[in-house]
Length: 218
Picture 1 (cartoon, rainbow, N blue to C red):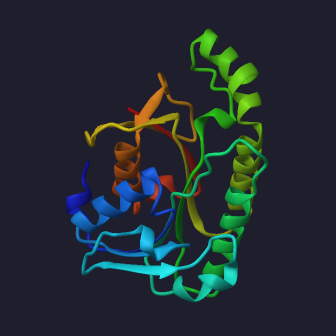
Picture 2 (picture 1 turned 45 degrees about the horizontal axis):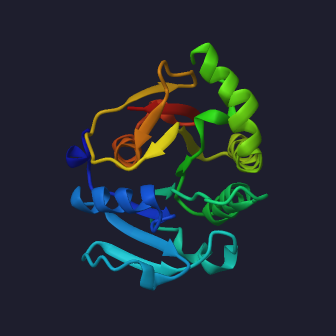
């Protein structure tokens, strides 16, 4: 955990009202960064901070936020869905974000994906079978759209990172995590939303993670 040592950045955040997004905003503000949060309903953010600006917008509607992107150092997407029905939130949102980044000086983009969109060979046999035959079916719509999101990222020219966490849990921040760049992580079982947010903030300027898929876990 090294968020306090970073040079202050201007960060545009999507999904700031979700479990991980809230944690990211809090950590970023505490570290001295300037945050612009794009949210559908500004009233859902009650936190007030001199470095926090809340803008009404929807990642699924490009025209609602396109003018807000320029002037930031990075864009962070903590977007996610809770329902298991077919979705395009991941793919359409990242496509819109990339369009909004075109013609600006903003090149850095970090998005949340999922470790379960691929069956890791480093998982124990039982968990590989669980991922392949149970989780992949239950979350098939979410995983399909997340895979599409990563395909869109890989076809872009921005400095993207797709962060693949395992099961997300609500536990206090520890600042301790493990990660694997373009590789599978041993014992990739779970991570707290707070530590996931911490990881994303810690590595927001990490050049090793540019155009990379990164598994992360506690």
